[in-house]
Length: 316
Image (spheres, rainbow, N blue to C red):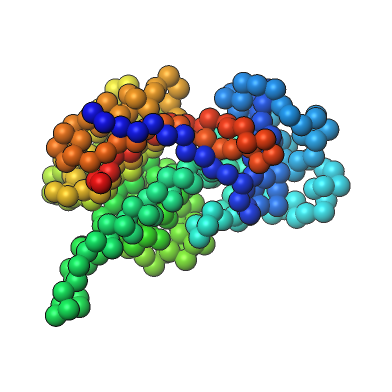
């Protein structure tokens, strides 16, 4: 099986920057605020001094599992109430509400921005190949709008990418609060009127019902956790459920699918493992596979912070 190995890099942008990392921490700028958070992948020394690291707006306390909003001149020059309640940032045309959560997350994974750009360009490239006869100016909408399924969709980065490129998206997550957050992001991005279904459900059960309903999708994206619970408390364990879900997903792919993306944050797994799991799709549809790491590049040094893995299949 032929494949390409890539290291995808998220670089500094107007609303996001990885300032420094090391000694199990990372220092990031989200819009106008600077956050300091733990990151076990940062297995090296910091470049900046401790005084420079203290120049932040919020620090996540890993022991107490909570944020400490710093009270210094740096913070007082800003709107601290916005920091606690949430603020907005953008990655190109995709906009997100940022909120410091009890799980140290912010509601967006910047390392995924490369995948979002890839999704948009892939969909637009496929749509450009569709030929509409001069005598038929109302081509079948399904031809013009690929149907995409986003499983474990969280706050909707990949969903927003699909919608912005002109696809119909079904967004599935077991968390009601995540779905609400994703809807907010769609509203912020001016995409709330686009064709999207928001589904609060267990991923496996939803896909099994889609099989019975004979629903087909032109692309599938998933970000399976190592452990999780569905909307009704269903337990997900990647070692038990991942291959079953992948097999079910293969049954709801259309006859001429566009792509299939798997992102991974579960410790102990390799992008090669995800590539091997996608082999049946390659055998059936042809196409190519790209695998590798999702990283963020430090703005000052160019050093890369590894954040996750990916495997993506697509028609060439």
